Image 1 (cartoon, rainbow, N blue to C red):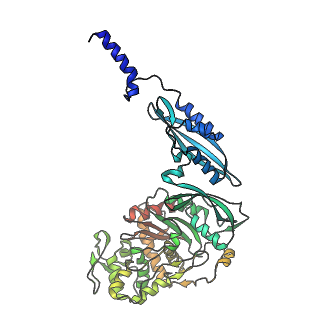
Image 2 (image 1 turned 90 degrees about the vertical axis):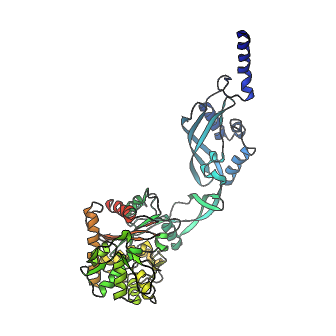
Image 3 (image 1 turned 30 degrees about the vertical axis):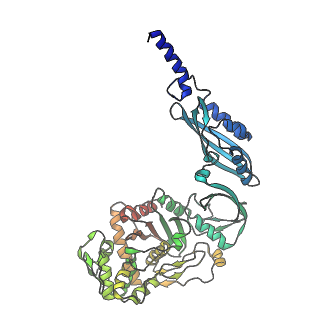
Length: 508
């Protein structure tokens, strides 16, 4: 073929090739720009011109306009404000732009939202790549939005000093339940996301509160507890109480929906050694008593063995050292040899296990060991690995009883508001002075090791514990504040509960 004819043929192919799907042929410049398309789309959206919007969308759904109208109708949207951000290019033919929006809901107010406008070149023209989440991110995955009438509080619950609660404080469920129990509510509205039968509340509209009720929560401690849980991947909680009164100073709960730090119970594991130690001190032992800590112990009439975490086997040590090392074999063996099931259960009950709670708190403080247990079960009860269970609140109250020498029921509101809530307030229980003193000595010695290592500030007393396949604990006190940290899931104490306790204490 002659060169002239070859050149003509190539020119024809360059012109025709684009219409045949050969995308690598040049067809001329792209029409418009991503900025122009996004500006036109947002202008049309503000006007409610859905036909103009649809013309700017690549392959719009047949019900494009109806989806917009239906959302506005169902949520009573009167107007929309849209503020574009900076365009971010994704190569030569794709771009994103973040948009901040505010919908005005009739008779309720503003509903802010953020969305991303995605754009790409289609047929040599910049188009919007529309999806339901362009309308609102909560519409992703086939979700729907609805306006729901609900009950909202007329009372604002504030801290003990009258301040507003810290943002993202982890106590929202507790404050909502407290308002419900105070029975001070009125009608309000909420926008909910519904996806696969699951409802998630996005925003609540309510009248301004007509009164304030002071809780016992400390702003400083509540904020410190919430921030100590920031970034923690596993479900976790911190509960802090005033040892001398039982007042709840902080409850940051990220264990899941509801009030799990108060109402859900977990195996205390090695943390229950505090209760067993109290029973052993009542039986005549002291923190300095020499006890065996073998690597494993087989209780009577039991096929399985009790072993220490990490295979710890230091031999003969003091009772205080055995607790700081979490020698499960020590406490199981000493319980079998010195205690009865009734004595261990009675000691647990005197430290709150099984007691009803009041003052807007609700629930039961854990589950004590069975009084009818055989001696094999007694061994596992003694190290919190059988049917014994405790809520994080229960464990904080246990630490408070050690510090103050008296177990006190918790309170979440001031004395005046508590009279509205309380029907029967549980009795206080005095811890024998020698027992309380011995436990304080043991907890101070254990925490001093962590303080010397730079983990805790001075003056902290505490005990760490682990429950296999359940979670890790650290319970303790500092001055008149007692607390419990619980982290759900597997993992060593030093990587779970202890770092959270350290962040909380250092923030105070």
